[in-house]
Image (cartoon, rainbow, N blue to C red; front, side, top):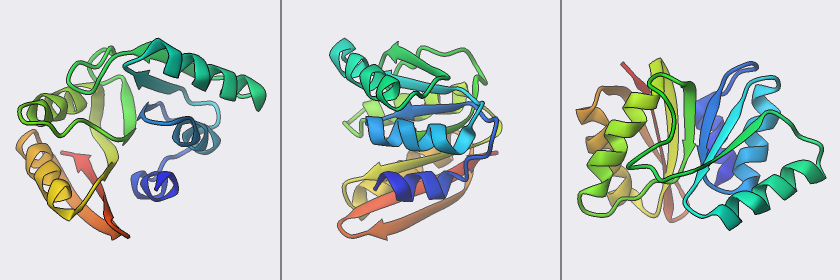
Length: 152
């Protein structure tokens, strides 16, 4: 699923990207942005320490490890050009997460997410559209859905 999300967000060299997810997703993003920064946000410090170890094992640099969650992202407004990962879709949390995602993305920024099924994907599309996303797409990959779009 990581590869599908990375393909959908169309990362380019030199971009700064926010990753809400696993080490494989963060390392995959790093390969695509090269000298750009990869900001990894996780809710648990031990998860960040594990990702740090994975990055050091392959000699990767240009990572920033931040404690947080999608409803409250620890980055300034317009900090990244792309965002990729999984977000909370709990009642109430989805709308807060969509607002935060729109806040930290630069104008025209792109995002790609994995959702557990097409219904959750459509719910995410509605939440992101409400905060200014356009060109929304939902692609089914097995039982999961990849949702992508651009901030208008």
